[in-house]
Amino acid sequence: MNSVILYTDGACSGNPGIGGWAAILRSGDKEKVLAGGERLTTNNRMELMGVISGLEALKKPCQVDIYSDSAYVVNAFLQDWISYWLMSGWRTKGKKEVQNIELWKRLLSQTERHQIKWHKVKGHADNELNNRCDALARGEIDKIKSSI
Image 1 (cartoon, one colour):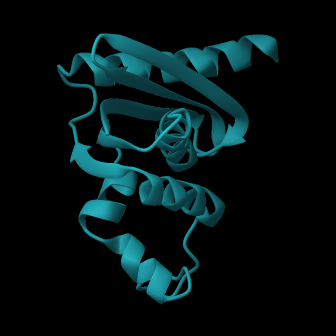
Image 2 (cartoon, one colour):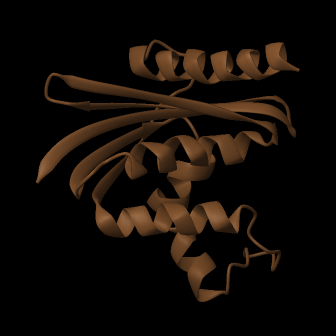
């Protein structure tokens, strides 16, 4: 099974507002960069889209180390919020509906396909790939702004 490193980030100008996401995939000496954005979205949706897009770009099941500065995404797995949400019919402990259910379902289908290790990184620090993802995501916001 191939081993892949996936760095992701999401950004939003306003929340909700114009958003961008990015993913950098590395396997051996190969690198693939993905980025996109939406005109009206939230920061959490963009964080999810970065991870989803990176995983969906993999053609076959892989061992994936995912690095993200999003506590929202990473803690859903490291603190196992996701199991509670599934058992409670996509409800939080406060009995509210989980936001972004359709994106969580897309992400879950990818976690079943790949062997994943989650890593929370500090945002806007000295992590080169996290900083590249942040710049790419913000670049997507700028592209959308300039097209309006």
